[in-house]
Amino acid sequence: MSNRLSRRMFLGTAGAAAVVPSTWGLVKAPPPRQFLAGEEMSVSDKTADRIVDMHVHFDEKNPKFIGDLLKLSDRLNLTACLLTPFANRKVVAEAAKQHPKQIIPFGFVDLDAPDVVKQVEELHAMGYRGLGELEFVKKPYNDPSYFPVYGLANRYGWIVLFHTGIVLRRNFDEPEDVASGRMRPIYLEEIARRFPKITVLGQRVFRPKRFELDENARTPRRVPEDLLVVANGVA
Image (cartoon, rainbow, N blue to C red; front, side):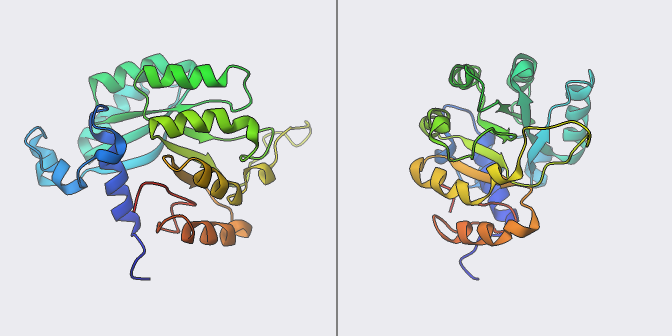
């Protein structure tokens, strides 16, 4: 359809919004090409579009991860939205301060943790720009017990990434309190409607639920179906 955003266009817009200094705010970012052509950008940034990867997991088991990521970023002209476990928040926050054009910190929190609201407040105070990848919840994503977290994300104007796909089993002989049905894409529609300042991203949508992705993508905003379930504030 002619009014549907392309994947490349969305990534450029969302990426530019996330890369700008935090004082500008996500929704006040200039168009991506205008930002990338600014006087403050490096020569390499001026001569090529910057790649924005919205889904890079921080590897706490690799002590060279940050250094390797920076080398890759220089080589590919890449900005990474770094999905960071709360336990590793400090090292990533410091790296993001030193390399703001290469690392955008996103915080991974357990929505069922008793102190999750305080964790999100702390992440915001440390300069984090979003949440993700949220997953393995004990209740459906649209359960009211999670609304305080979404309320904070709404206040901050954050991007929030949700895992909406299947979950692999590592040990078939042990019981698990994990269910893909709690992470259905349809639940994200209500979140987007209740919290209109959040940009909601659905990750790894599995095939039986593609119809939910398609319907959600048509309802609140025009969004690229292959990337998002629902998006607020990006059109």
